[in-house]
Image (cartoon, rainbow, N blue to C red; front, side, top):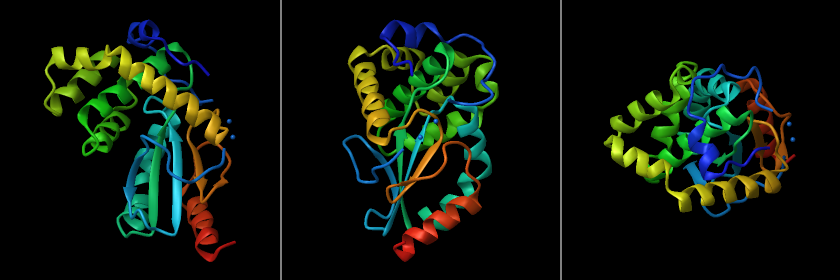
Length: 208
């Protein structure tokens, strides 16, 4: 996995084709510092998703599965959903993801998921003009271009992102996105239909 330096994360915002896949594995369900969480914190079931906002497979899952998953489990309080940031793929994909995650963090905890949702929704056009697409999203959340540039060029924030990604990779034993872990039990890395998550959550709720 490539953990970007400040230079590589910002220099890669050029047009590039999306990857066909996003790289494989996983474990722990408990919270760690800087986790981004939705849903009932006291839910019996915790679903952790290790994902990259630039991963085409993650983008497809967001569009096809996330709305039904969120309505069925997160909004009803049955599941605590934890998003953990990953950077996988080539230099361009990694740079786009790093920039997207930095923007989401700059937007603040209350708007983090709104920003990442917007980035997923922007695929596959995101790859046609990455900087333009991300700047458009930033402006939607009240950032000026100067504020956007300051956000994504913040070396301390990029170092913190790199540290989170390294920790997430080690903690979950993850090297592919998306990877889902349900109460500590890893599903096969990659796209998971709602039916697969239904079965894993049912097992967790029954204590199996």
